Image (cartoon, chains in turn orange, yellow):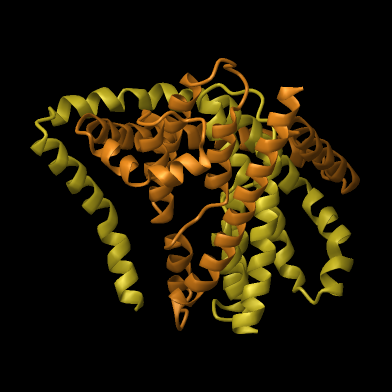
Length: 197
Length: 177
């Protein structure tokens, strides 16, 4: 499906530019996009190095273990394939917690570490496991308590009450997360049935 | 209340750092060396992400700059008019799952043009925070570990984004409408 969307975005873009008589925008856009892709990736190096370093300390000191023990029932419900006490649980929890507090730049390295651990758990190295899909669903639905960026922007534009949208945002993001979990569970069951055949 | 939240946001990261380091110190973990050991992974992982992000960003940029987005909006116009949804929110709803910076740009535009406390401004603010950028998250998370087949992850992500957008429209019209 990613292939279809990727194909669609580019082809629609080229068609639109041609129709608008502005075909040169494609040239600029393509290389601008590539540049952004590399720039963002490079920017990730610093953030990742920092938080991966911190996470290593938390891992060695047993802190991650402690946190995952606290939330074991929730993790077991959402990720039934992860064996108890597997390091993936600790990273998944740190990732979700970081997201919850709006620490996007911390959440990414933790999420990636979680993915790496999840990858060790499964034989097919190129396919997303059910746990990986679940983790992705939880991340992209973005459950956040404090949407720091948008509050900052509202303050910049002299909002009378910048944080009034926190409640509505929480509602909307909770809905999206709920839908993500329900759909994820549904697909898991469906794929299990297909595999059993 | 808002002073409380800004203070909380400012304290969060230093608190996490202090907590992790203290816990490590008490457990006699060689802090600096362990940090370096963990940090080494930063470079290699970020480099693995590059091809995925380049692929996504090229597609997204072409789509945005070409005017294809405007075409898509025209398609949706009858829907927004039928449900009394302000048309200006549509670019945001469509861009949010595709590009984080693009979505933020649209949100900022809307807030600048209509004010942060208008119905549109509040709707844009809510929608911005309701979900994350699905295409970006997939590119980064799956790209970093070399996953080539994402199965149903994309579908679930996009549907969750849709749910978030609809929920945002609903709740903002109920609370502020």
